[in-house]
Image 1 (tube, helix red, strand yellow):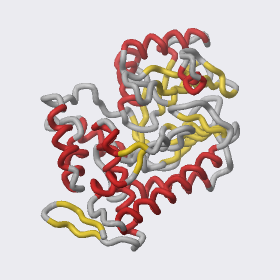
Image 2 (cartoon, one colour):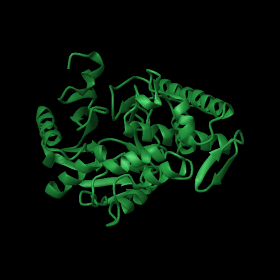
Image 3 (cartoon, one colour):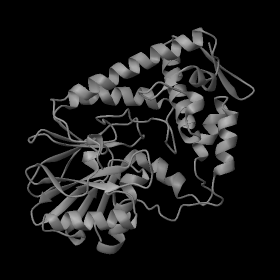
Image 4 (cartoon, helix red, strand yellow):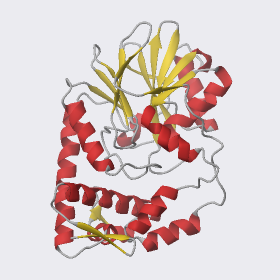
Length: 338
């Protein structure tokens, strides 16, 4: 790929700890171009953390990577899925249909799957409702004009088992623990191999980007409050190597969590400042803020990222309300902050 920032996306199986291989798989977009799944040797079989997106190219790369370590898809007995986003969950379902692998998922993802599997569900229903609530009619109208017609629930299925609390998982040769970390989604899990000092972090802690908290099918009252609490939860654990879903493996979960907490503190301060300067809705505040590390103007973002910007801003505004730094009232269906 030429650029060292993208070296982690190169296909293959890369040993990151004894018996643990990182396998990057392709994604069909220009943003997050790849997702890491992790193959964990467990006796004569494999456990995979996350499954990738159910795409032919992704399946081919997974088969080739498994062959490098002397295995195949039929050797996967279990998928431990961090959350029910398409790039983590759908290929696990596809391989389960073919090989009978067991799929486990966090209990709180049930709310998302209930919506995704509903005959009435359509893409971005929840996000469109929130955009209207937060005064972002231009963004909502553009997204509606681009949305595909008809429901798309045929790829979604429920897991074999739900993980409903912090719990030990019954592997043969290793000790692995699931830990709920709501925020990015309400049922997000990380998986800890504490003796080896490893955290399979999913999208909870990412080395180069700030995980979104605005693309949830069934959002809680304050996803950012949940996310910040989950960051502090993992910060309170002994430090471990960070095995993320997107990006390279790094040596310290703590270092990155500290950066993420500092980022959100700065973002809360900036968001409060634009309200003090006159922004009233999340849409107005998002337009007054800058975006990405390049400090881009809101109007320079594509419509999907404008949607995410509005929802991220709304999440920060709601935390400021919870902290009694702002007030909020609904006027003709739109939330105004002051």
